[in-house]
Image (cartoon, rainbow over all chains, first blue to last red; front, side):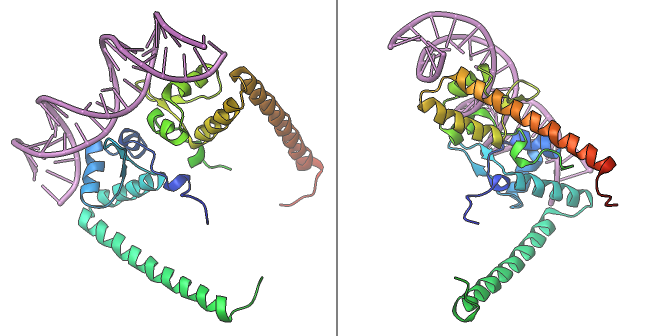
Length: 107
Length: 107
DNA sequence: CGTGTAAGGAATTCTGACACG
DNA sequence: CGTGTAAGGAATTCTGACACG
């Protein structure tokens, strides 16, 4: 858990390779970024860098698009899922704090 | 085990990013390839592609070099380790076969 | 809306070579 | 031996724009 971003999350893949990996055109990949579906980092001189997780997201997006789902709908789903996770995260955090004070001692 | 090369082994990182990640110059990285310490794949048009595992190997190589170890020595160590692993692999395979015929039934 | 494409420029990468120690 | 560097070319990536449906 104290790990610094695992392989899956590290942004190290250039757009050309992402294109090969996903089968999407560079145009499409850049457009999905414009629509805020994907968030590459940038190298010092401005080149986009993606993670394996980004690649997986892009493949999910590609599937949704094939089903005719529009980008703004995909975005809404993403945001909904994210908010849900945040609520879950806060709940876990709280559980941890309560345990720390009143829970079972294990040290 | 039936997984197709995990994130760690997939060759998707270009030399510029490997250079950033390892602190080595591109010249050094290419030279270590020439000395057969590292084996990038190539994109259709000839660009080198590395995996995270390659990046780790390069960092090990960098450490060895700082200690003054020469590339051919690093190579020898690599080969020794590899042969040892192969022997181990064959042993495990054999153990599996023996078990399959004479071992405990578990199906 | 989602994607293709031509345009022009900037950054990346490649190879083979010369240099130095 | 290990690494830097300048050289020239090829491939990559970037942005903003026009096109089409």
